Image (cartoon, rainbow over all chains, first blue to last red; front, side, top):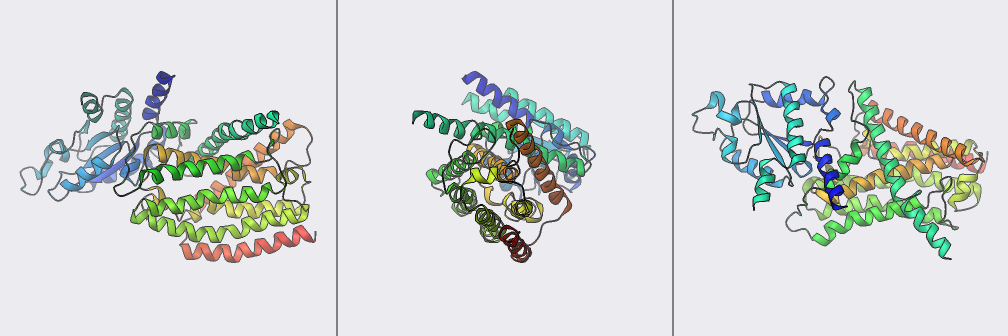
Length: 156
Length: 303
């Protein structure tokens, strides 16, 4: 009985990934590319995905921008507010490498430095198809318990 | 006596209670989302979406905000859910109706008020500014939409000279029934918080409204309550039209058809309108709601 129940919950995690996005100093390019994911052409609702206004309702955190020093505390706060299990997707080149802002004294330049990132979507900005694929992959990782926050919780 | 208890438990848990109500409510919610998606040129969610949304939320860890009493945090959605399940069990659906007594309409109106009251409390308890704004809006809207809702039910009760729901479901269809159903539909828009009156949960303005701090299991219970509330209120309208038929299967068919029609009309209104300000919504209900109430009373007592 317990096995069936946890299996049902695992499948549900794949079927309904709710997304919260945070802009950590991005130029807005990546955020504009997130909007079409949920509008008629790409329609993320087909895979059960919804944009949520509150991080407490989300499963997946989309983070864009090179993490400016001012945004750091907010990013950590939002990450801690998402109830586990959760996944983190870094959108575009900025959270991976700092992109054109690399070397600036006002940015951290790496999302990895403050929160555990599961997936990187390359591009400046990435295409909506790629973002949707990342959401789908993250949902599958949540189902199998492969995201880094889930693994850390298991090891503790 | 034991037989009655068994029947009562059956109608609380299975038909028309928790199990059927949840499945029916999830079906109606899926239908709403799919219908709106198709109107907007999207594909929409798959058939089982609300079911998986619920179970995913059940499987999440719950974070209780700092300074909030955990007992109240968990108790509010449970009370809300229980009162809607009781209201659903009182619904005079074809083939059900074990719990029926004179005056059950009054009890049902009381139970249907509970989710709104609990929402207002939940908004204040969770200590979020957005939730408090949502709670104030919900409180104002409650005063507004209850006018056509209560008028329609009281007018029907005056016409049939009883406060028993079973006689509502066995009365013949008349002009008064149709007008009452329309007045109930007017209130349903605000009760379900769909678009012209999606003021308490306005996601572009106040994040997620009342439930902004809720997560995990309590949020799942609130979502389940919403599904059950939808099936109760839609079922209440559908029950007014099953009177003239004798066969239980025809009754069931008419019940489902009317429910589907109500949900489609609800979503046409939701997809075709923009959100009103709270003052405008209030004015809408206190002008057109009063007109609806007067018409319903005239139809019920004169025609």
